[in-house]
Length: 418
Image (cartoon, rainbow, N blue to C red; front, side):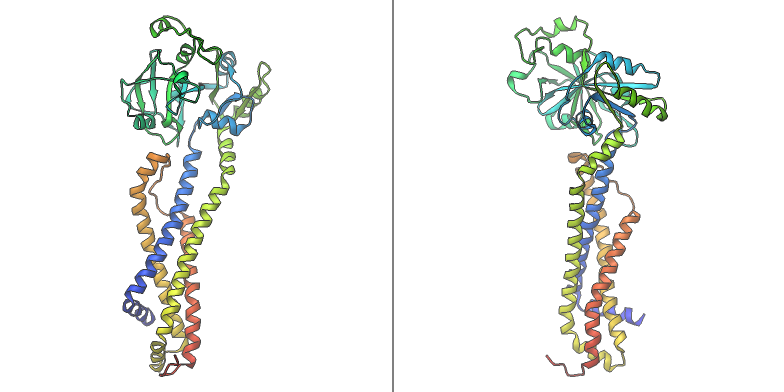
């Protein structure tokens, strides 16, 4: 207790140096835990982009490519799927529900998704959370659309707004279906997934807007909306479809049937496995983030070491006086260790408090702009372990000036050789 009180008084006597050292450690801890928290939450959000879906089916390709265009709306399919194939597997005895998806069009940089009512009923994300409407309802008419929250926010759309869909990913003048505007009838609540950056229309609407575009370009025959609404459209092809099964046990059996389907080459993937493979491809960036945060902590601790060593030379007379008053070399050693431990602990506590303050402010911003949900949860076992290692490193760092002071106290007297 006497050593602790002495260490406290010594630190309060050097307030400015102690405060700067604590701030250095605190900033290091904030960066270390902040990077770790963002890394784990990003991975969690990434893994929860889609949930509750047992199989995703598309044209024959690699599972990462299929996942990218069907879930993340990145890239394009190698080929389309015949509507008859979808109907056959959607009516399979093992299938509980099926969601068809048609891709290929866009609106001002946002992907347009052709689908049906099953999408809003069965598509889930996160911890099996369903899609909900912030405003309006799902489309019912031929030229109605439901947009994601990010589309509405970035483009300033609201219920009743009109949008023009462009043929293909590039939204340029000659590719737009200008004579067929879509009315916004629903805006989905934010999900933190690619759904927020998508516009959804019916599969029949996809067929309707491409009348006269059969060759991939505008042939000049473009019926107006009234004419098209009198026509009964049926999808001919789709890009992919998602399946929910009655039992998880049937997953591999149905996957094998789809992968060996003779009518056309198809691929069925398990979303969880594909997500894990895709995240593994980005592990270099994940490891780089962790390495940067570790180097920041090391820099902070070296700063503390520099501060302690600098002050030690000025405190040699103080140590000599303590020795003259009966303090043993081990007491001097314990005093320096206590100071380093106290500074590190104070830095850790301040850093954790500052981290939660920053996360409370930044979490909604990160959710809005990057779709990563940062939860304000208690420190995990791994984070406690990281903090324990920082504290241990602080003690080890403190041992360097402590050993030096221990040796000097044996030879120094009341007169110090400068």
